[in-house]
Length: 474
Image (cartoon, rainbow, N blue to C red):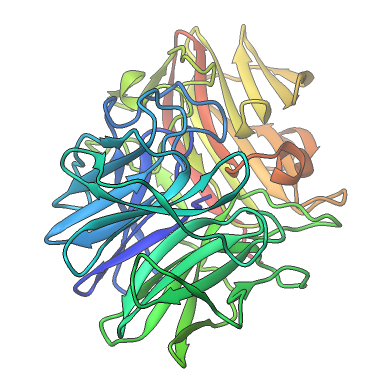
């Protein structure tokens, strides 16, 4: 749901950024005072010059960011793997809520997962995952941030511990040591966090004897795929780490549907090496429930689109939000979507259909979604799995306004959940179909993002009066 976390502290405030892939606005920015309760305060990439929306296929676009504070500014570096300008892109802001600057593009550099750090002389070092025909590992280069140029040839600084896919590097300075923290093993069940240290940020680096310092591979832990950690020091001198993980459910191989999520672990120091505490299974609940009647002056930060940016196809109305039809270059729907979380939940869209055609859907990506299509006086339940799209049931369209409901419930099969699509007041008689949730999981469909729920117009426009979302708690 919110993967690839990067965190920094400014005084007593913590700020966090996540990757956003094809979705726009991009790079959600969060604020917290305790590292546990977070509130989204902005999106970093809100303009065409920052992220050209509607051009990236599913699970491409904007990859892992690094967020840092230096000399009164917030700095953000990331990689848009579909940007014709190439390389890594650096942004800055005086206020983490934005606006963020136009990008400075490091077009000479390859790879993904760039990190920013400044050495004792004030030189900015970019450390990143790189590959050649013969090797993959961590490279580093000094850069001029203002001009966007490398000041030297990139050099290899560590190839990890021998596991596959050394990536996600971050550098930290503590008590005369520089620590290089990376992810290894790939972002699946074999994911781990490893660390090395040096007296210089340029190396050479010695590997920790207790690597991997964090992993849940080959365990029964409820949180799996853990890796891609970023460390931060609290005001009291203690340390913590944010990292990504998944919560697979169901029978083997178990299925995760919320994408890769952000988790928190305490970090202690023993003999000048970091040690990660075991992750808590408990995930804070209740923070994702909402009811949006679109009466606020601005569209809420929760709403994103896999196609064009929302400001290109939505407009406010006295009694809701009008969603219009807007084709995109990548073929993805230009619609209002929000990420969903929790094990089981329910959402409903109160809409005035008008004369156009539109769909309310739960989507994993453009080729894997379950939805309710409204057109020509009917509501039709549709399942799209890969290249197969099937009409499952249909009903006459009730009088406007109409409530379209999607519900995640306990599984009937061996998957993570069942998905119900229905119309009406939730009395139980409103369900058109009940579908296996496995087909909207990463283990089936692949990719890096989790489920989102939303609405898009296929012709003309639709008035959305209200959207509600609530987790179902035991």
